[in-house]
Length: 83
Image (cartoon, rainbow, N blue to C red; front, side):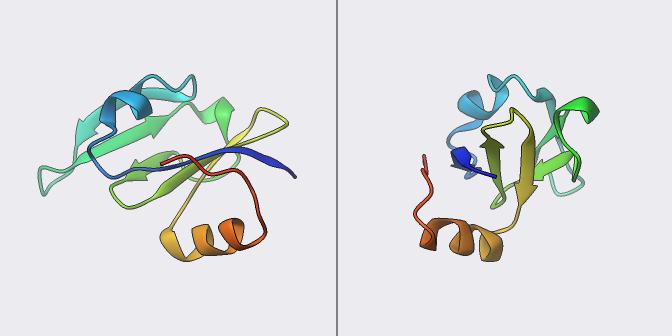
């Protein structure tokens, strides 16, 4: 599937993350760091986005959360990336 948007959640872009249509809300984890929750119908994978994770949107409209190691794979094959 083709990736149309890839965002790295670094904490400085919390407003950008909050405004994504797949995000149901943002709270804090046990270490007082922000975590974002995705609507279940927006993804077939993880529904929690933590600092350091990436969230991408596929051309199909589905969203996926993944870690930095997987992000390197996506970026090396020339997909669009936004940070």
